[in-house]
Amino acid sequence: MNNIRRQSLRVGLLAAILSLVVPGALVRGTAHATQHEGTEPGQVVSDNELKSFAQAYKKITGIRLDYESRLSKVQDQKKAQELQQQAQTEMIRVVQDEGLTADKYNQIFAAVQQDQELRKKFNDVFQNLEKGE
Image 1 (tube, rainbow, N blue to C red):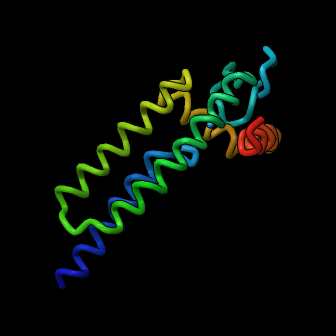
Image 2 (cartoon, rainbow, N blue to C red):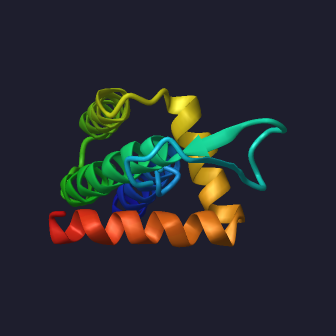
Image 3 (cartoon, helix red, strand yellow):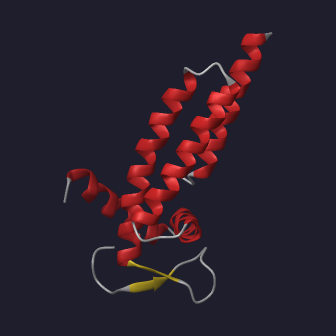
């Protein structure tokens, strides 16, 4: 019974961490900006914002994986909650370090999910980051 409760707690906390990052929890350096479906009317995602989003997304993915691993080993609920708070704090810091607010990050993420053209741009930018370009 205790093992089931612990497992439930871990799954719940992992879900909470994953929900913090709309995985992502995010184009090239021109001033080009485009209106995208899924953003509010008149709102645009510039190439620079998309690049910042991609950089934040990459770092947040690493944080998420790290904390998933840590949480899978935790038995104590209080310690698990502390880890969850640490993960959230790190993710927010990463987003801010990339020059975005949490709201802007989430708006861009939603736009990337909903707009095929923007998703393709994001994938291109993200692949370039992965290659170290």
